[in-house]
Length: 407
Image (cartoon, rainbow, N blue to C red):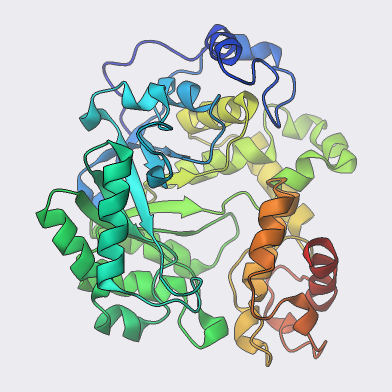
């Protein structure tokens, strides 16, 4: 990891108060509790890593266009220079903290979805993808997008090998100077007879013009994901971890969990900081995108990312989180989906549960859940899926619970 040599200022509570009082929300930011006393200390600057073949030096923590408008200026000050889904901003709505910088000092990503349906049922369409990006560039006032990212990715290895519509759209846009680099955000598709994300990404690393990929990755995940990361590093292929914080949000509001974390062996750590340090300590991973809604979350994540190395307290905290999640929180590995005779998108359903319980985004979770062709109510309680669950979740009961919550 390397620090920006020009960065000498940290992020302080004074910065936060100044931004908060000049913003529309003032100090009472949405979803944020009171500032801790330690917020008076500077956060420092995030480390940066090479984003594979793109050659971009990006912040170890990736920002996102759906972050709180009050947090973004502070994130910029802390060194966040890569913005996931940056196309959601127009010339009028792009935060001043970003657009006031030299254009070459920050990186905007545009995510390109299938058309004519959702990520499972839509199609790849070269011309529509091309027009979508061209129009977004015009609205943005940014001149170009640094990264064109195929959102949700290919359904199968065969599609990745034979359907070149996304790549052709990218090539046309690149020739016009509207995009610079090609990446993918890959999901599993075994619920519709497709392939697993790690198999598709492994193929793309060696056999495509893609330069980087984003995929689910968290503590306790499958060995196949570590193998992908090792191969990616060897082949100079960028990687961003997403959906890393399973269970962290609900654990933070669980009184029993908080009582346990007060024990001496956990002092100086939390599941959230331990997870960030665990991610940052992996030399094969480029960066992680983590939902961030408040100054306190930003402070915790930036501080952990800068430290990187895990302590014994961090290891204990991660072990506690893993035990807390066992039987409760889906790792999104999707192994269970292959066993379901009804082809229910179990992993997607439990991802939406995360939105509701860990990110506290109930409306978003319900909206996503209600787009499913088959939701939790389609479960016939056969139990075929349950032996495949490495988290020992009672999937039959869980689907009923999620349907009551989101249906």
